[in-house]
Amino acid sequence: MSHSVALTSAGTVTAWGNNADGQTDVSNDLGPVTAIAAGFFYSLALKNDGTVVSWGGGIAVPPG
Image (cartoon, one colour):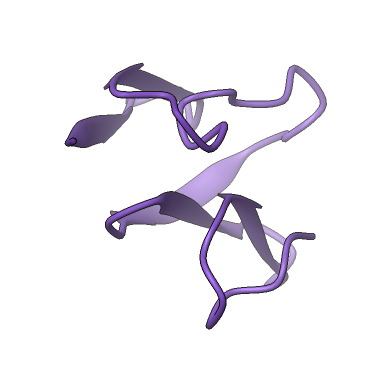
């Protein structure tokens, strides 16, 4: 039950591994990203504009 996320030098995100809760479904509209993190069932991205986007599942992390 694990997944990984990677941030490219171009600011794009790629993810792989377990996708039971959509945690590897990176949106094509995510845009430039400066930082990423992965939790047990979710992924997070800090966009260049300072907003944080989450996807996947988990009761402590609302999507969006």
